[in-house]
Length: 396
Image (cartoon, rainbow, N blue to C red; front, side, top):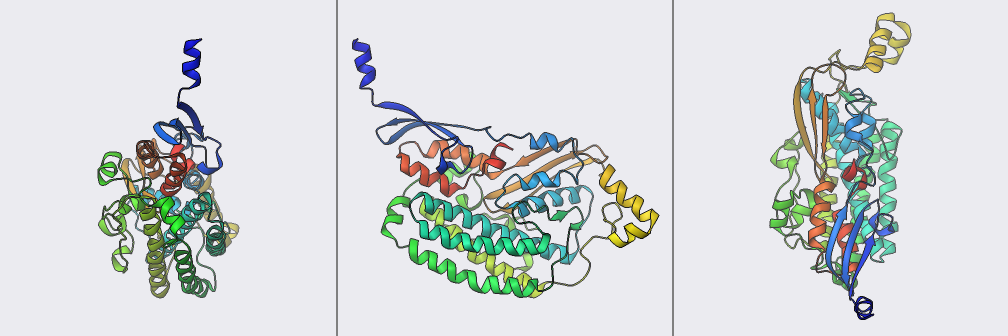
């Protein structure tokens, strides 16, 4: 009886946040030991959205696996498509055309804006700022409409191809992109007017969920979360690819490493992405979209319908797959949430022998377990939204 009374008044309680909690925005499970409102210990569990995507990459041809990259970070599918295509192209010693590189940079920066919008809008909604959510989601839909005009899809795009892109830019795209770049900075300024100096927002985010520089080094944190902690690192500048060395943009770095700084970094990064999009729009070259390499070049539809040799070539590419030489390659890009990389080992033939994905959500979920200890439950929700963990690339 005495032991039962002690258990009855034990202040330590185990609770689950997730895997189906609305604030986790995905199948994330965090088991917390709480004392009142304070989280004394936490344990994060992954695997609720595991779909064996990496194993499927060893069973599907290089072309067939492209659609699975959309399902990693589905908020920025274009960035996944392009990074994967880059990796296979590096294995095959293929360099895309100038026009293709410009279009790919436009896609990656649009993806960055969309991803940051989703992160800030969802985080604000979790903390009660519903107006911010509606304002930002409108601009996400505007960006999706532009992407839809490019490839016919909005969320899971599968726009990139090994050696090129599935479609060229549509007529009038330059004017549409210019209008988008002229108008979205006004919306960003409006959001900052609502949040940046808002006393409730500051109280809920300042000194909450602090990730230190040491934490970033220990857990391999990259992207906006690392830059918000004062780490001046951006692969677009430090390990440049495509046309980024020719573009003028700033790397945004914070200092506090808290939820508030991560919000500020993402807001300014959207402005920098708009700068990049404007430059790409002005400098967009004419010329071929596809590399002139018959190993990967998808034939023109009219030729497929009228020439037997071209029909056979088209059939072999899509039914048998492209022949990738032996070797291995790791390629990474500066994704919206951090370093996104693909490691491929080829033994020759149309399928990879091994494929592995480096996803920022995997490292960010590890540091989340450490940094929520000592905080309160509402702070954990704010912290989780600010690191923007996407279950699709976390579990894979």
